[in-house]
Length: 249
Image 1 (tube, rainbow, N blue to C red):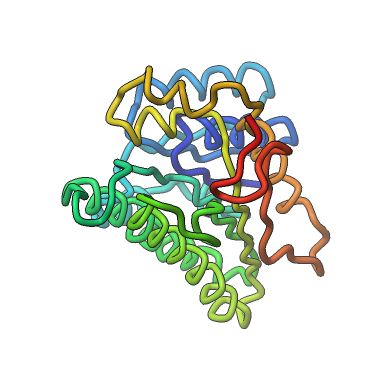
Image 2: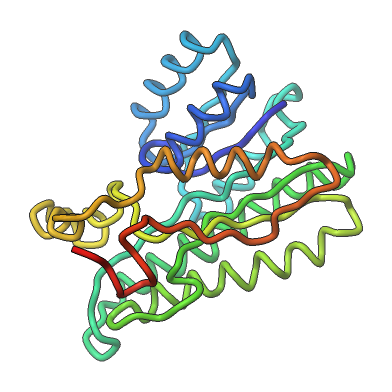
């Protein structure tokens, strides 16, 4: 069995790679930081005696995605599970004050990047009439919160694409699922606040958020259902969070 996981250099992606490795999957891990990919590859191969292929590319660049997937060795082309994890938030400002570079970064990564990877991997799954695509969405794809405007829009797009993919790929017996987390403590807020670690730390003060391992375990659970079972859509929240804005501190 082979799983391809995007954004595997940290957080949910890295933990998902570990989780699938625990269950004997060979892996294709992708990201923009080759040194982190190499370190993870060495760790997983040593610990779990599996094969790991690293692909260093930016999901926002369609040509890089196309070349990376087309260049897969034959023994790695039979991808059973694609985890579309690569994604980010950039900025937290009202629409009138939003930075164009933040908007483009989110749209290019969360929507276009997911589309590029899905297109090229799905075309490897279709001839085999087999595969499972798992999209990592967000509670922001189910609700909208103040100053979340464009980020919420991109995750609503992921929610719609998840439904559309399921319809389009149904004739090819390819499963499509999504997992939509609430607050997860990863590098997410550091990225959102352009590296401001102090501001990011305050997001998780006095609460117990989800851990990336929680989401990774859920992603693997989705992938491990019997062939006749597909979990279409799943929301997972920390106990202290009722919705995107109601948090017990």
